Length: 349
Image (cartoon, rainbow, N blue to C red):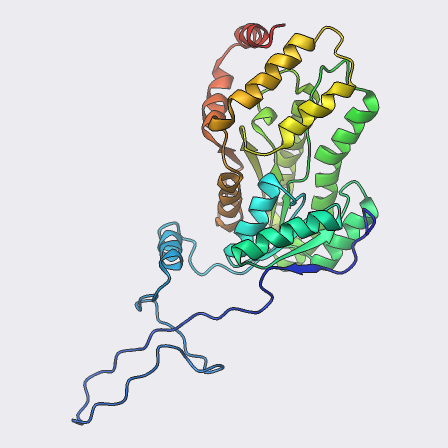
């Protein structure tokens, strides 16, 4: 299927609806000496038997732990939402569509090819969850409109993106424009398309996947950082504009994440002329490889996505990962001259 085509959805994982087992209810005292027959703990199909809150959940400790967590955080009785996540073939996007589905929401992700859709299908089958995919190139305005109008999402997770690795003066303008189309204009386009449906429903949530680089900036990720700064500014204004409609806007700022994005950006940077930035680029690439142990797992970010979409009053921003928590909170207190000097020293500039 060509990029930008929306076609039919591709259901993934378990296609059969699941049912929840009910435990038997205790019988009260009886005036008869004849003991009534024991009831089966499994209700007959269509019987409508429901479990009361006080009853235990047999043989499902994970569900029981999740329910306890929900009640402690005031999230019990959640509605099942339709969640659209862009760029779900790997990394944070893949983790998000799986976690959202496991949580019981309708999970739909966009990918750019049938091959990527099959990767998501395999991951969903392994987790025993249902995920749908749509083939979509997020820079295709017509395709975006078709997907959003067909799905009418309650929650939009703008995750699709990539990075450019190279000095600002060495990256061609055409490549920089394409990056901004993907990281800035496409997420805003999707948000604008989803807003009418959310207003009609009286509720909605729009999540923008930013980065720690939405707060700070350093070479050789200048173009990437500038795009993330731009989307955060737009998200701040949009949050104020749509709050009265019951729509929440959230920015997520992960630090380092175990995903192939930065390594891919480093490999592709070889086509840009280094022009005196060879050592800086080499040092940056070495740090990416050396700090893998410190990076967050994509599932950590996906769980924060769930927190943001399920919270009754979500935060405007969520810093994700130890490095994001430390750097994101300390950087405003460090003067620019000192930050510049340290960064240049570390980067070999």
